[in-house]
Image 1 (cartoon, rainbow, N blue to C red):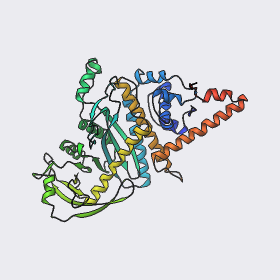
Image 2: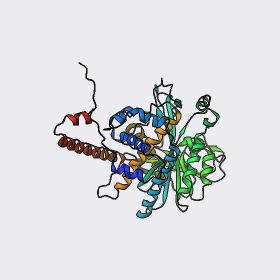
Image 3: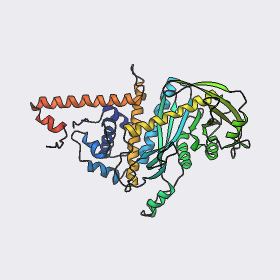
Image 4: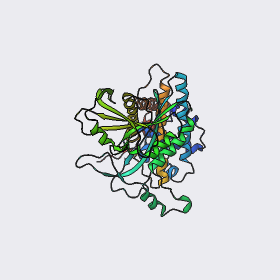
Length: 431
């Protein structure tokens, strides 16, 4: 196996220098080694494999101790990265003169582990509400985290996240913890509210904010909480058919309006193709929500027996604007794909919950850095259009730096033996 990283990239060093972080120099080196390994290294992302990609790196046991016992706060690092990334995006939006329309997306995702996993704290059985069809697993072992993503115009940041633990899991973990170390159970609503409280003071007060979510987050408590953030904060999300609007369930409203006229709307999908939807709009009050909301009933065809329902607290919007703005929530699913498939979010092997929490923070740190590079590229003549392009460019940069270093050493040594010993990881070949 050929090692792939000779030194941290200038871009990552610059990004790290802009943070007013309290980490010591050895801790900073571990962060940059892990982040570079996550982005550059192909295949599995275990600590051993991440450090195997580095030329002249220390043993992987050192980085395991960095996650397990090193005294640093991942919460402080997360907050610094989130505030710096959001501030950078807001500054670019103001310079570009983009209309100040903010989309804040919330969703949760399960990082799936093997069903026989038992020694990793916090990893437990999780219900998969997306499972459908015969043979689909209704429960998976893994960890759940709730994400908050912010998008303004052509810019976006994966603002922050929170790990969610079931109440039963929290009780189990607290049995072997001292009183000072005990965890506190928080619902997904409480985690979402906590992230909104963190975000709200960082956004200009005059900007309009739309909070996007799927039907699992459309509780009356969350809708009212968003309304309390100010008159320019609105919620826009999917909602289940059994919710009551003006005394009738939404499914009943759909039946009662089946002979009424449909409004035809054409929207672009994530792949760029166009689809036509038939919509009806109702304005009224949901149960336990003391103000008017707009509900859109959307069908793929007149005979569609399972329409989708969307709620918006901005009653001035038309159905087409509601659906177009809701479609921006899809980008958070793309972030989950990068976190899991490209950055190895689920590859942790450390046992303690605090160490796993730090692993999550470093993977999200890597995603923040990639978005930072994507924003910076817009200043160039050939800007990147996706995170995938940023990753590919970053890997090519390291490949070039590695080749130059190997050639320079070969010139100095006058042979290739030292180059092979230094840049190629020994492997055992079967006889």
